[in-house]
Amino acid sequence: MKIEPTKDHFIINQGVEYSGIHLLIDLWGAEHLTDQLYIEHALISCTEICNAQLLHIHLHQFTDTGGISGVAVLAESHISVHTWPERQYAAFDVFMCGSATPHNAIEHLETTFKATKINVQEILRGCNAPE
Image (cartoon, rainbow, N blue to C red):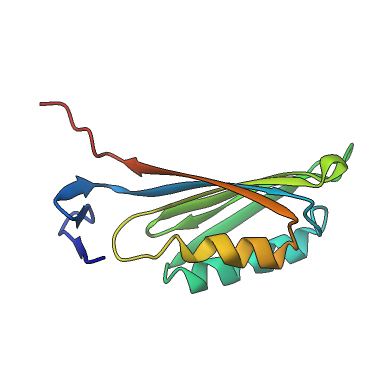
């Protein structure tokens, strides 16, 4: 697969032009979902493995369940996370444009959080521009 980034960071791949790849990654049977430092390090390593540039991370831990919600803001877009430790479930959104490699996040997150089941949906953002 040859991906050609453009000057405005849109991607052209096999004749299809789009702004970026948005992966919706659901992890079930996941671990470390209340460990804020662990999640922060996971977001940092995920950014690195996807060849993206980290700008900022913000995480918030909820006192009632210990669940964590947050975002890693990237030069190429973002990675967001929401955890439900009481269900051993985590939802990640990985959205990247340009030459970043968001698909690298799939196996990395599955392994890092020791998920027993994973579901991934892929959306090409910005590919249906109005005429």
